[in-house]
Image (cartoon, rainbow, N blue to C red; front, side, top):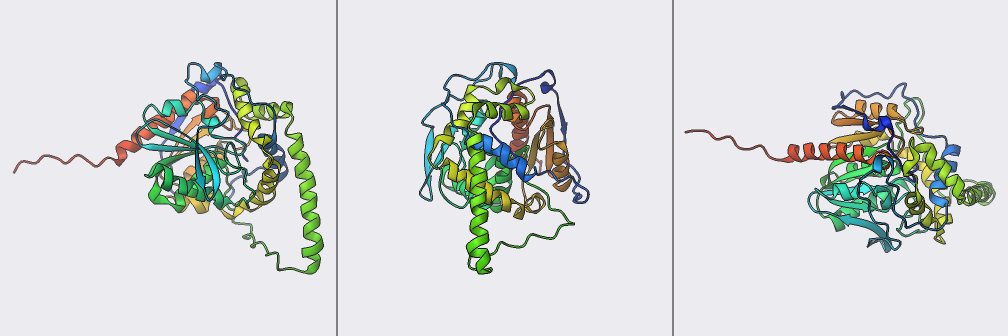
Length: 383
């Protein structure tokens, strides 16, 4: 499904990209491949992204591969800017001037995952990169992590910090959050960019999931024996996975499995992912994420969200992603007509694996979006 703790590099083929314009509006729900990862695989891989705790490296990122010659966001151990949201401390980066762009990381990552994108985009735009609640340098709040919480966080960030309509850009879990936000506050979003987004299409052959029972409902056996035993078992399993994912060798292995070129899997990247796991609340946040959010995300399917979307959409897709392949991008384009697609020869996090190509494609699309928004010049007529 998604792990945003990855970086990348350039291969000989990473410079090649294929672009397509908007697709047809037909709805392709039948026969589509179920693209969400199996829960067991998700627990193992996502855990590595969030839970590793080792010392934070402050050395500059590798200058190899696709990052050659690109300016990099300086790492700051104490973070950049902080905003208080519902009494919680939220970290964000702000650079540049112009029309606003908001970058949203994936599962287990942070604003530092946009290290090669922020400086380049900030040359023409006002760029924000926010850490979602529970991730990165934002507070590890002990709350119920429902899919709505990050949508509400980003919506309020747009209202209180950005204060004008923005383009939202999201990778993996951040892509899902971006799309969800755009459908709930369309007046605050003028465009959406998804990079190997999380989320699933509904299965027309599967009955809708019944809402979860309240704790007060159900038999005494369920409330006092079955549920406590189930939670205890989950805590043991997830606690072990959290501990296991702290091992640096495992972190590096997972990162390299989703970056086709591993040149950018460096100390900067690994440190920016593992440092937040040292927070005392990180283990409990991980448990709540895996046991609650992952089990109820299916309530908000991609077809439901795309059916409410009302702005231009760009898909920047790493076609070599072992988790979320190009078939998903094709299905999104089939479903939503106002979609442009750029295919990159990269893995799950194309913005960090092939930043030069990703930046170029994004800037070209933003320029076209800006031109599209400008009112037509009045024609001069002689009387």
